[in-house]
Length: 262
Image (cartoon, rainbow, N blue to C red; front, top):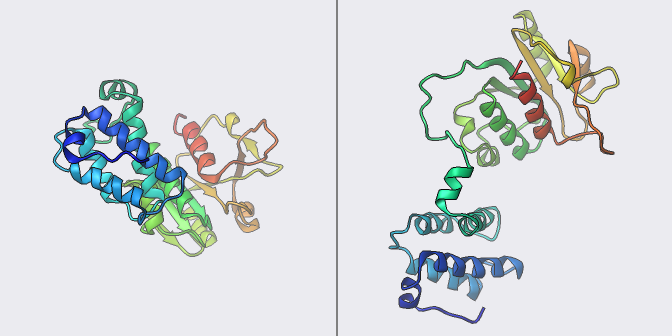
């Protein structure tokens, strides 16, 4: 990476060429494990300073992402991902391929499904954030964290939830068992999602109760014996590989996808 472009040279290039130069240098930094104090990173920083006044909307977006970088970590990966997307397809192709309603106002909102997802001692903030996002995508009533689960205002949960923690109703209860006992008195059915011997396959579920709580347990140990005993029904996902389980956030997404269509 010996090339060093002056400001005039860089600004006289087409936007696509500028992005390619940024990408080549950025991937070199990552592959060779250079830090933010390296000469190569300082060169990348200098190029973004040169492009600070660019009118190109993609360059402007890259500049914003670059300014968030404090280390060669998660945020740097997001910056690289944006570079790859810009080089892989034009804006016209992107708009054609990707459907999004993130910024659209829904004039006819779909009623929320009367489903509560209870996350008991799911220790990974990444998983909790992903499960909040699943809940928003499938329009689920609310999410309850209990036990060792981090709350929705945890910084790592917020990072993965991508704003869904602000729109999904959530609460925390120390004891999942006590919370469930209260909700049973209110007419809720309790369905435990677990790979137990007496579970029903998700695909066989054809009807949904008017009010139901879905229980999701610890990443490694699953649902506690107390929660298994208090469940009205146990549900598992039929798998065909050698592994007998899925990541808990992926399992939740599959379950919600099926149940939200009933």
